Image 1 (cartoon, helix red, strand yellow):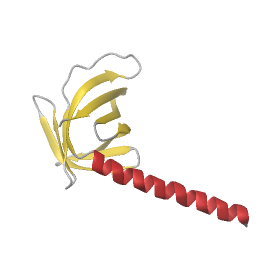
Image 2 (tube, rainbow, N blue to C red):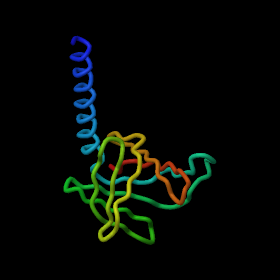
Image 3 (tube, rainbow, N blue to C red):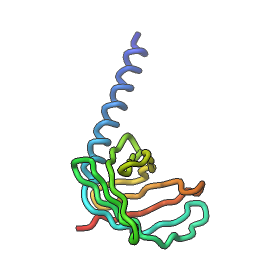
Image 4 (tube, helix red, strand yellow):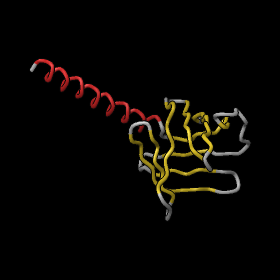
Length: 122
């Protein structure tokens, strides 16, 4: 009985700590982000493209690729950022790091894992 109670308490701690992290991520992501590094994870080869983001508190996002823009809605669940471009299907990236001034995410593009480092614009 004691083990069962302890297991339930530990499970509750993990659930509530995960919720708190998710709330912090929803706050930290707000604003304008500039890509400062982008590379293929397994080779280290640099990707020389622009991918700047904006996120607002109404769950809207915009990506500026330089010659193209993408807009739609977003949400965060655990370590994933989900985006749905207007009129398109949902996609997601893994959030490796997100704090008040740095965001790093991992994405699979054409079967290749890539890391993108973004810095929050002041």
